[in-house]
Length: 214
Length: 181
Image (cartoon, rainbow over all chains, first blue to last red; front, top):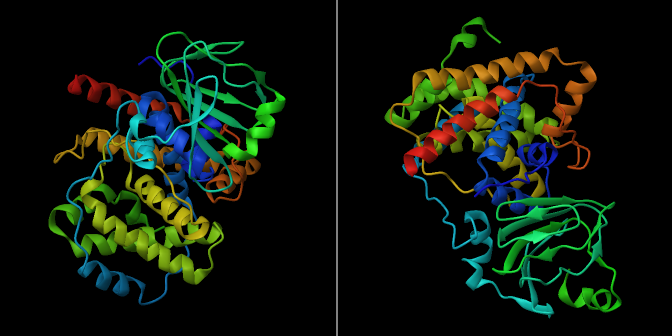
């Protein structure tokens, strides 16, 4: 997998700091699962957190704190092996964990023209969904309020400026008006997250918006 | 900080906890890291009681997960930070945090000592670099990590020398991919 479009440093640092909404966390964790470059960059931001812990002014622990903790670990067993989460099909582990498996486990809903989507339950401060776009079909044209991340898991799409293949992430903001179209061939499956409801330009999709939960 | 703490090999202590359930080693780790974790959580908005409780949780997690720590990838401080961060998300934001897929590597029984040293030195160098940043910039980075800034306010430009850490880990990942293929 050759990934050409990566997460921004801002997103990786926010994820390292633990400050992203859950829906964005899911997209970041899924991309990092596929991308060694972003995994390494994330580790460097986590090292900043380590350096801060190491250099911070100390808080006083209460007197019996160590004794209490010693008592606590007395009864604790130690983990001997990871129980790694497994990916399923084109879904890396974190996404497969949310969906309960691969693309065959997704409960797709038709949104017209062969395009399907499925909302993934996350915290309310941002929303995540899977998109299923047959080759040649356009994702409905939408403007953005807020930040939108789109991660390609299978197939590819193009918009006015570029091509996005498996593992690539598109980061779009308010200023962007675009019309992504899935490439002919394999169905394009994407994971998308936004911190604002989508605003479709077409009348009918806009009316349909509340019903589809996007 | 006491002078002798500078030289302490924290990774070796975690490995003693892992291999021998060594309580003296754990106590040393607790005395060093628990007050730091508590301070971190208080700066993140926890009151003293909650921060104390969570700091104990973090140290208990360190005991439980000592066997999963790979000292050639991250320093103990960095590992403790990630545990504390996750505890904070849990306790203060009550949100779920999906983690990247685990790679099928480490921890190796005998990690490469040179790499362990490098991971520790990365943290030391970053600490020194952090201290040398202009006050305004350092404050922004600290606020980002204490959860005081929203994701849209966090600036990616830290002014910190992160390139070496990224390349070191990138190389380790390449080696791992080669072994797997």
